[in-house]
Length: 446
Image (tube, rainbow, N blue to C red; front, side, top):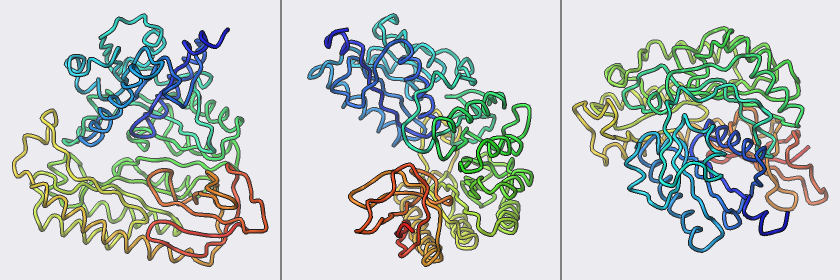
């Protein structure tokens, strides 16, 4: 094949949003590679550009639109001939998006990823919005059809969709009802990723602790942990109502399952939780986190909160602030409520002014910064295993401990020392922690 023909078979994909989106992107790229397409990281080299979008909240939708318009410029000044937009943005905004964005050739919804090869090859007509039901999406993709990122960490999607009806959340409409992948398929994919050299496997879904694909999450975690005791196993996105003692005990029994519990609680005030459609209360949350720390004193706790939800009073917010101070989460993320007419919460009364939501956000993050730094100081002087993710400069690396998830938590900056060339990225090394920052740590390779 000559160079010009090779260019015509080159594709670039930009993936936005969460880790679940990243898995979808990797499956689309795997299908394209099998169909004979060459993948490039440089959009200027691509005959076809794909954007896998997120529209969970307003800022995510805005980022998706900005990215699409930025990459559309390559149709005028590059070799790009087709621009394809996939994922949550077209799924949420449906057919009218085609008129609003004439730069895009094909839109694929979350149930249409299996049509990616047809879209790239031009089989689907220009202006097409391919929007089959999200529940038509395959949940047991073969691992051979996945082009996994080259890093040391890989995500394993264990289910698709969600059965919850939180009033602020659009995900059930974008992804359908929960469909669990068969456990054997997940374990087989995990084994192939370990064989490919991955040092950390992270289980993801909309609600991992609701998994019941022939067995509970506890048994699935145990099976994956036994594949290779040297490989870290982590799970994200637990729910307070489905995180049970069996899962906690499984984490405690397996040294390579990271004692890391990501449990988005959103709020603690009973009135706010009821309006959110979250069927628990503060009195149930406190024993849950207490039980985790009693069984696993070294456990890292992470949560996500929403400020400015309709009806949130000053007293409601003070309850939330007090809970954060009491539990002292290792990691905490905060979102300001993002309103939209297609959300059930849009019809609630008592919408909170944006400025008030921002002030509450700022106050929470100020408290959390202090908590995070105090927790980080406990690590100074200790020796920890650290997974090195990338080399920043000569003898300086960026990595993570078992108590840190990628992209959302802090990192550990590791110095190999001036007299050493240093280890290779992708390896796990012992690191002596020398200093603590607000969210990050620094240390020296031992």
